[in-house]
Length: 287
Length: 317
Image 1: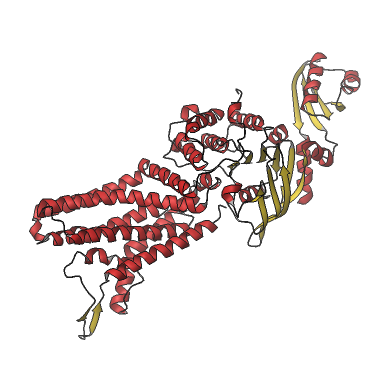
Image 2: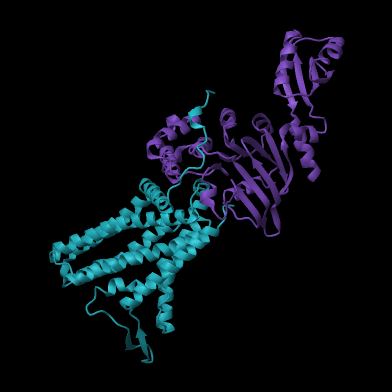
C-alpha cells in the first residue's frame, strides 16, 4: 500500500454550491450522456427511422395520390397518424423507469447523498428525457418535411406548424405523466409495463367505451386531447357530430376535441402529474 | 474553521409497528473517527440514511454542523461526503464522468476538477480504469469509485456505511489506510462497520447500537475497559517450534509487561492473557523474539473490542 496523496485529503470547509438551476443542468447533461451511451436512445431512433422509412416506401410505391391530394392531406396522413405513437414510445422509453430505476438499480443512492434537492434530480432527469425525445422527434419531423417538400414543394401548410407545436405539448404532457407513474413504483419493469399498457391500450379503450357507450366526452383522457395533433391537419377542423346509427337507428355523438380544450387537457395533465410526481419523489424513501 | 459535528436528537424511525431506530440521542463533534457498531438490523444504516435525508425521521431531528438535514438538505450536506449502501453508478458512464457529475453538483471549480478527480481515483487505486465504463466493473471496483466520490470534495464530515463491503482483503486493507490517512485533519468520520478489528484499528471512539437503541458511546479505551468483562484483556495464542519449560512460562513470560497470565497448551503452544494497546503488543512480540524460545506465530485470538461487543449485544438479546 503506497502512501495516499495527502494533498487530496485536506478538508476544504463549507464550499459554495451551485444554484439549484445549475444542478438541474448538471443532472440533465449526464442523463443525456447516459442515454446516448445506452442502447435505449438508439433503439428508439431506429424505431422512428423505421416508421419513417416504411411510410416513405409506401408513398413511393403506391404514389402520393393514393394517400393525399394536397400538402395538408399529406401531412395529415403522415404526421397526424403516426407522431402520437412516436411520442408515446418516447414517454415509455425515456420516462417509464426514469425514477423507479433510480430505486431498483440503486443509482439514486449515488446522487441523493449529495447536497442537492431531490426536485433538482427529478427536473434534471425530466429535461434530459425531453431533450432526448426532441432529438428523435426532430429527426422524425425532418423526414416527414423532406417527403412533403419532395411531393408538394416547399409550401408547407401553416397547420403543420400548429400540429408540431401540439405534438411537442403532447410530448411534454406524456413525459410528465410517465415520470409521475415512474415515481410511484420501485420496480423499473412494473412502471414501464403500466405506462405502456395505459398509453398504448387502456386509454384508447376507455376513450372508446366512454364516448360511444356512455356518450360522455372523454375530456379527462390524455390520448383524447392528443386528437388536436391530427385534427388541426384536417380542413375544416372537425367538430363534435351527432350521427344516426346503430341497430335501432339511435342518434349518438362522435366527439372531436377542440384546440383550446385539447391544450387545456394537455397542460392540465402536465401540471398535475408533474406536481404530484415531484411530491411523491420528494417523499419517497431510499430504504 | 469551526468544529465539524453531527447530532441526533430523539431520532426515531418506524416502519409500521417495527422500530428501526428509537430515540437516538448522539452528538459527535470534532476531528475524530467514530466507529458505529451493531448487529444486522440494529439501526446503523437507518441512522446514516437519516443523516443524508435518504429517509425521513418518524420523530426527532438529524443535524449536521447545527443544520437540520431534512429541512435544509443542500446546506447541511454541503460539507459531507457519504457512502451509503454501496450505490450503483450509471453503467454507461466512466468513473471520470460519474465523478465529474459529482464535482459539478458540488461546485468544485472547473480548473480543479480534473486534478481532484485524478487524485481521488489514485487514492482508491483505480487510475487504469478512469475511462472505462462502470458497467464492466466488479462490485469491489464500483465500491472504490464510490469511495472516491465521497472523498472528491474533500469534505470535513465523512459518513461511511461499511466502506469495506465487497472488497477483497487487499482492498479492505487499502480502505483502512485511506480512512486512517483522513483522520485528524479537522475531519469527522462516522463509520459503520461489522469488522471489529477495522474499528479498533482506525477509530478513536465507538458507538454501539442494537434494536434501534444506542447502547454506549465513548472513547474506544473507555468502552473496552467498562464493558469487556475482562478488564480489557485479550487472548494471544503463541506458537513455538520447540518445547518450553514450565519455569520460563510461569516466571519469565508471565512477568513481561502487559501479560496477566501465561498458560502452556497441548503441543508447543502458549496462551497469554494480555492487557494493552497495539504498541504494547508490538513490544511483547519483540520481547518474545528476543527470548529465543522458538517463536513461529503470534495471534491475538480475541480482541477486547470483540469481547465488549459480544457482552453488550448479548445483554440486549
